[in-house]
Amino acid sequence: MTVRRALVVLLLAAAAATSACSVESQGENTDPDLVDAVEVPASGTCRQLTPDDVAKPANATKTVPCTEEHTAETFATGELPGEFDDADYDDAKLGTFAYQTCATSFAKFVGADESLVLRTTLSWAWFRPSEKAWKKGARWYRCDVIGGSSASTEYRPLPETAREMLAGRAPDRWLSCARGASVGEGEKVTCNQKHDWRAVTTVKLGQPADEYPGDRVMESRTRSFCATSVKAWLNYPTEFEYGFTFFHKAEWDAGNRRSVCWARTSE
Image (cartoon, rainbow, N blue to C red; front, side, top):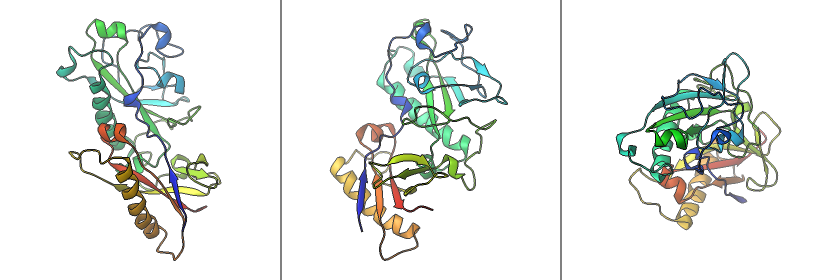
């Protein structure tokens, strides 16, 4: 049995870099009425977002009808808690709040459990007001589901609505696979394409209040637990190959307690 080790960075849009905001930094094809907006954004709207848009802390891209092609759908918006009334624009606690809020809402919206969330090629991004609006007192957040991941160079179009799109048997075109000799060195593809590895399960390695155990412990536990988990998923063969992805302190502090297990399979 060959153990393949993979280190993949978990998409944490909540931890995206926050630089000073201007009209130019609020996305492409901006809507003048949304630039530096103080009001809480509307939910249920759709947009054509790109990875460059998602890399920015604020976004004022024009909305499009959800019946038309789009790569993002807003699924949650709201006022930030009062603790952020006097917070700096780049306060690290904002990222933690966004991760916990958007991640929970994302899973419910697309119909996924904790395990599936880490094995899908769908992801989410969050935005705050522009820095100019922040100085005026704007304190809101916006969570968007996007048709891709942190590794995507472009996003794929979403259905008219992403609500419940992963419920039941999730379609392979939105699940994570890899092609190559190992998970870590292979090309990440969707599972409806030719592949050699599939992300099949996840293993939980701690409780919400637990301290980060360190990289060495995380790797050891993940290796052991994934061996058992993948063997069961493959229906207990005598020989098999598996890989695993474990995450680090930044992701742990944001709330992630799971590692991803990969099976060597073309199915």
